[in-house]
Amino acid sequence: VEVLGAESAVVEDVRRRAALHARRAEILESRLGNPTAARLEWEQVLALDAQHVPAQRALGRLHAGADRKDDLVSLFRREADAAPTPEAAAAILVRAGATASRMRGGDDQAISLYREALTLAPNHLSALESLAGIYRRRGDAEALIEVLRSRAAATTVPEVRACSLVEAARLYEEKLGD
Image 1 (cartoon, rainbow, N blue to C red):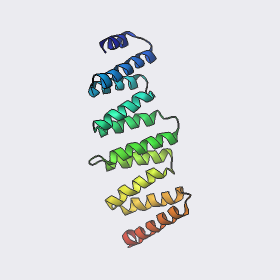
Image 2: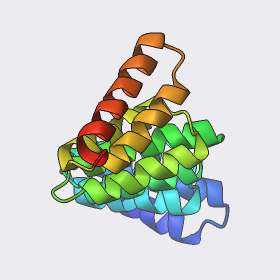
Image 3: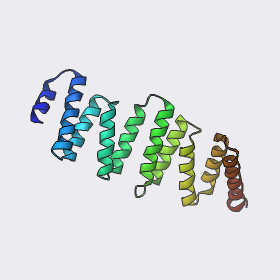
Image 4: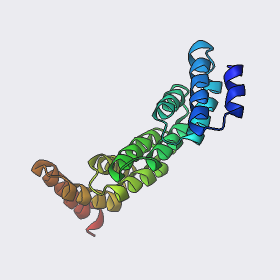
């Protein structure tokens, strides 16, 4: 591990340096049982190559295993920034939103992540469903009606469209119709 660290300090080629940090992280995690040090090495890999998929996956696994949800959300955000398409970035942001929503007091962050996903992919049904769930829990009828109308417009399934519009109409009548 020390030899790999010394070599990575002098190697000028960025790809080679990232590969050395990755190998070092693998050894620290699997052979030496040091996930904290491995996490730092994987972070170095991502600093050198933001799209290094094995580093993204390893950090995701390490953050999830250590119940480091804040770090996992940050990792998802970086992964979304490097995604090849807006749709792929939106899907990653939805995963980040789901993680944030499981954090104590994370609903506001989850809402922000789901909204960001919807700016990239306005018809992303998972983002709309997740937002609807948060707004139902909060009792925020106005926001829920907005999301239900968006969900109705985004779906091609007649039953989902009808249920969304019926729920929105019921909420409007009960909560806002005064």
